[in-house]
Image (tube, rainbow, N blue to C red):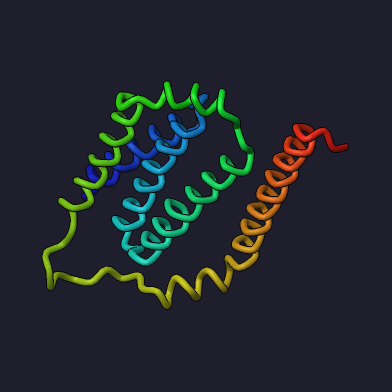
Length: 167
């Protein structure tokens, strides 16, 4: 189990480094999704099944949708869209899909047999922790996400007004 933890941690760190070092935003998003999957797997290995499920639904789902919303909001134009479409080849998707598949395979291989022992962390314990000592941190994270969304809206709006010739 310890070797599985370290293998998942190494793959997660590698995916995170590749996610922040990509110059093409969508490629970075693919690697960050692999990193989120690895973090969820690490949480699951540590016994926090509910936190792992939250990680997948909130970060891998909602943050990815927020990212795509911002890309649509920025209205990159037809030239940039065609240039990015040329770069999004199946080879660009290969490595993130391979790493994500490896993490999913490790997760499926490590699943306990049906009827096996239950893991110790449940939804009640996670809720008490999130709304107890970590409530301020959760609220600060939500304010940071809101500020980023408002900034993206204003940048996109400014570009649209400049394209239309409005002040």
